[in-house]
Image (cartoon, rainbow, N blue to C red; front, side, top):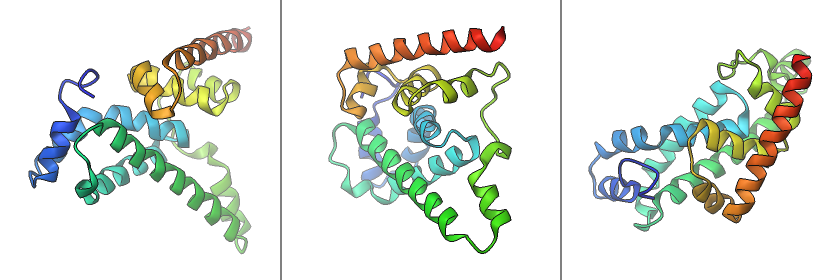
Length: 183
């Protein structure tokens, strides 16, 4: 999508597909913030999100021959989203099968000790508590990742007006709840 990035993601992916491995660094620079916000929307944890982001770029590189030449951001978004979903399923499976060591199972389930995004104000934590999953993802993608509503709508298969409404509604929920926590 040309409008979002200072470079053309389709063009970069085609360069990579044609064997120009230097294009991978350009792709990363152009898209890492947006993809990180997508990963964070699934994991709510900085370290897990960074791991998923790294794995996403590895998968993009390995599957570059499957890129059709158009809708590059949607293509890499889909890879990232599917990878995040699969990692979440694997994490859930790992927790369920690790019944021999209760202490380790408890640590895997309780990620309160894991690193999170810098959140001195507590707003991200407030978002986690107050918002539904889709609302949280839209807020993180737009406010943190800088992804435009039009693109969020495409990748979530929703109308742009619906995404805007959800975002504004989510902000109102955050404001109301955040004020209550301050009082």
